[in-house]
Image (cartoon, rainbow over all chains, first blue to last red):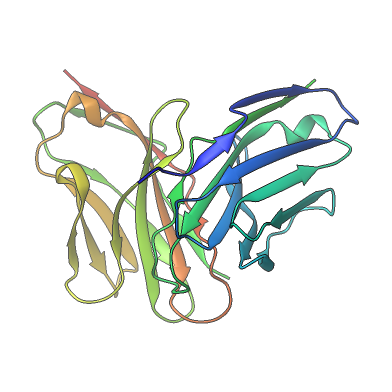
Length: 114
Length: 115
């Protein structure tokens, strides 16, 4: 079974631009969560999608948004990029709707904002 | 709100010696606890979880963790460390009930196993 796939692996953008990151979950998984990892703030939860609906949202500004498609693939979008948005963005998928389920992570997309 | 503390930023251990990476947590109600490992330029890899049952949980690559409810701890252990275990380790918690299903992570512990 293929794992969680995130594309692209690396991105370089300039301030003010917008960016879209993609995540394909493990086949059969319906929950997709996004996390931001930075050296200063560590791993922080962005949002979770389940069956095309946002189920939970972390404490990030409205510039950060996401969506999930009917095939469970998810995208996240960051508009009006700031230098502080430079981070590793991780996507995780999990199986049936049970809290104990393991979240499996992709390799991440490293975003650099210049 | 839940939280996780990993009190050691760095743990060094000699190859072949036992290792312990510490984790304490705070959560309302019963916790679901997880350990993940991250190698350079990679995502997080699941090691083990505690949901309920035996306090000693066995996971991948010879790792185990001990759940202690009274001390709200979930320390990661391995009887004999390998150089290849050198990586960044994260402890995570989520409540077993309620609508907040996201993982809350600790700040991470860099484990270095010296040959």
